[in-house]
Image (cartoon, rainbow, N blue to C red; front, side, top):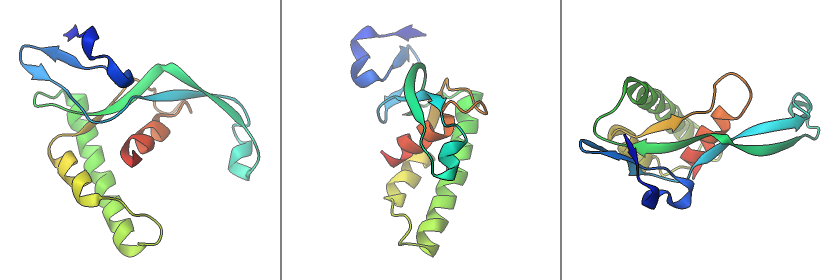
Length: 133
């Protein structure tokens, strides 16, 4: 894998080699560090967090995918099905361009992330922000 420095625009890394190109589908989303208020914000209190750019994630699409990309795409398919149901059953709650989202996921879109899951550093938030954007 070769990192092409000319393509490091908008904070999004593009990987490229002879057989694989990754298509940019949006900006890079960073993890977070919650300085205080971890449980307080659940109770409508205040907290303070800062972005932590050591870990990040972005929506990507390519033709030669890894096992992680295939698993991520499968998870996104379930998420899109949930959003579609939610939009149908409660249209006042959420509105997405669900057809475009479905098409992107069917074409192999996945969330490529280095953000650790299960540690409270923003993996879910980064995914949601990427999908919403």
